[in-house]
Length: 240
Image: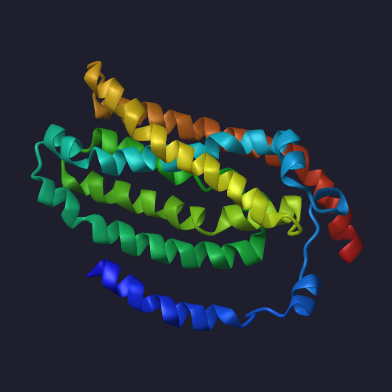
C-alpha cells in the first residue's frame, strides 16, 4: 500500500516541482553572510575549530536517541514494565516535540542561536537521568518531556546556526556535512550500547554516563560559540 501511494504521488510531485518556487533573483538577494562577513565553503568549515566543538553535539542526540528507542523493549523489561506501557507514552514525546519546535522557533527569532545553542541539550541530561532512575512511570513521562524539549530544539536551531555562523552561500553542503555526522551517530549508538549491555553494563548505568556526555557536549558548544561569536559582531555592527 505504501509503495502504491508513492507511485501515485510521483506525477503530482513532478508537476509541483516543475515550477520554480523561489525566483532566483529573489533568492540571490535573500542571503546571509557568516563570520567575518563572508560565505564559508565546506572545506573551510571542516578546518574551522567551531565545527569540531559542535561534532559531539551532532553525534549525541542521533546516537543515544536512536539507542534509547532501539533498546526500548529491553529497557522496559529491566524496569519490570510491559512493553506496551512504554509505548503508550510515546504520544507524549511526540506532542512535546511539536510544542518545543514551535517554542524554539519563536525563541530563535527573539534571542538568536548564540544564546540558545549552548543550552538546548541540557534537557537531555535531565531526560537520561530520569530514564536511569525511573522505578515508576512518573519519571519515565518526565524523561520523555525533557527528551521532547531537545528534540524540538534540534529540529529548529542547528540549521539556523550553520547559516548564521557560516553564511548561506554553501549552506546545502554544510548541512549535508552535519547530516552525515548525525547519520554516523545513529549508526554507532545502538551498537555501542548493545556491546555494553552484553558486557554486563546495564542501561541504568549507561544512561547516567550518557547524561554526563551531554553535559560535556553543552560545555564544548559554549566554548566554541564564545570563541567564534566575536567574528559575528562586525556584521551586526555594520547592519546597525
